[in-house]
Image (cartoon, rainbow, N blue to C red):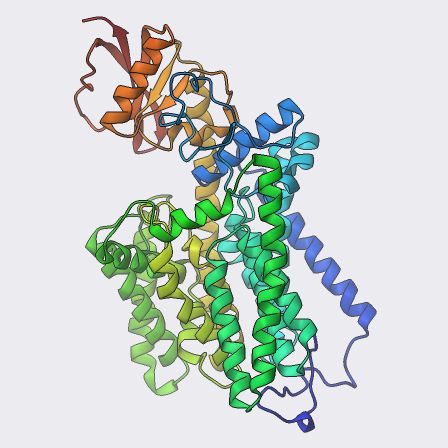
Length: 571
């Protein structure tokens, strides 16, 4: 990308030089510094990953990916078929052990996207899950470099502060340690922002075609990339139209769309060749329809939680606490720049510190809010409306309601930093870092220290969670019953590192599916079953033709126990 522009170049997009040519480092030194920074960041991720158990994960989608990798690696095949031991009695897969498994042709597919699987498979074969984590780690490094490039587009010196803040003090650091496609998707969209920006500034269609390819590649992994793509295309065309360049605006839009079509069509062909049908497009439809049909109130509630929530629950006080935190951060950012507002600054800062301390005092767990995990975003909301910063701020904010309207509902609390909003979080984080220059040194330090602290909290939670999930999953594989029925949808999926397509496990998340599961087990000749659910002090489930005979408990998390109830066939 171009990093400097002479004032004489004119036009609304003209940029001034960010580094004086007399003191500019050579290209070789820039490359070496960038290579060293990327290596240091990658090494940091590798070191942090050893605090986690490779048989436990941050989210259940990762469990499905690892289960697929295990089967692919064991069978030495490229198709993502995880198999189903009970297909004979349950041909539509209603009680398949891995929730969200789709029956495509003759295959049982639990993968959400194939590109990440195929990138991770050779690494998984060579070094297991730990080596496969290089995929999201490299995605996180690429996202950090994209943050630096965006900061340079915003006339911010060399952009290294944005690189390090995004790399080690934002949700990107958390998702670098889990085999999810989030970091890669964010990196692709962020670099598309850079190339499309340069395309508009330089009037060069090559940047537009690259941006389109990057956005299309991102959409094969993250559905919300389509939202950002639509906003970016419309924004670029609008800027060109203000310059009275209708033909260029239309050409730019068409070029970006054409670029997007290439990886999207290639991914469709890959899915049909490997799985016999579409994977990502069907998931996109599920996401758009909400899979659980929910009303506007639920979407608003979950949207507020992923915007600023500090605690992983959908209670009204959680939404209110998050909004209060957002308001206090905004007030602190605004007042700290004004020496005459010291009392307001002190009160707002104390309120922010108190809210974070209360949350940390409640113990490890998910922090689902974008602003709560990227507090520097509040600086962007205050100072992100200058001419240079406005496009990135508008893109980040305009995407929020669209993503909320389309995102899958039901999973807002158990996530870190609004995982559907990570692109907006990165953009606001970069704009906020650039705008920190308007604050006094102590206020900048306060924002950065808060970001580092909450990210460290997330890293600690990731470590504890992976160890807890791995321990509980291992115990589940050692239960004495010949078959297990999971009444919680995602429990068996959490145990993806132990998945065996021949193990007699089923998942029944409703009374109707529970009846189906026991019918399948009876047809398979199994007369002793363990039913696994979360202990809530409830009575044993009533299953016609089966009787409960004893129970035991397995500790999942510090405040969550699993109950395993033995059922025997008979009156």
